[in-house]
Image 1 (cartoon, rainbow, N blue to C red):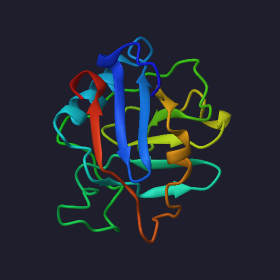
Image 2 (image 1 turned 135 degrees about the horizontal axis):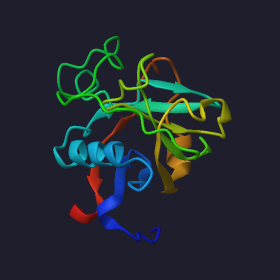
Image 3 (image 1 turned 180 degrees about the vertical axis):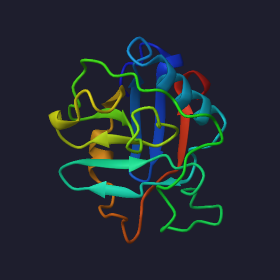
Image 4 (image 1 turned 60 degrees about the vertical axis):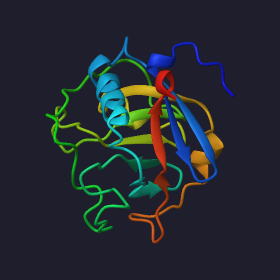
Length: 168
């Protein structure tokens, strides 16, 4: 397993093929990092579908309102919601959207991020300065690469569980 330097700011996502370890970047995006930890600790991300997965681009998940595949799941609604918490304002930085970085998904408004996020399959420099980067995959990117593609995928993959490493 990857060396976890800061368990309080490390997320472990269990996928069907194995774990994905994400190092959060609270020094760069403190509010987004805190939101991910809060939702993970509340079990909100467990069983949430990857509802938008574009080959050569990114895998999007995190719709805790409509994406829970164990709770009245409707694939057409997945990706349209967030959490019951207020939106998080943009925390743009100079960090590039490189392969394996975590970006905050949002609507047209820069300050509309809530619970959804995406993992970049490749370097997506056109996103730089437009979406908040708040983490990076440090282990398990091969499992992200294996996520079922589609907008939405016919048989979506899910995050089986999401935990803060300090609690695991």
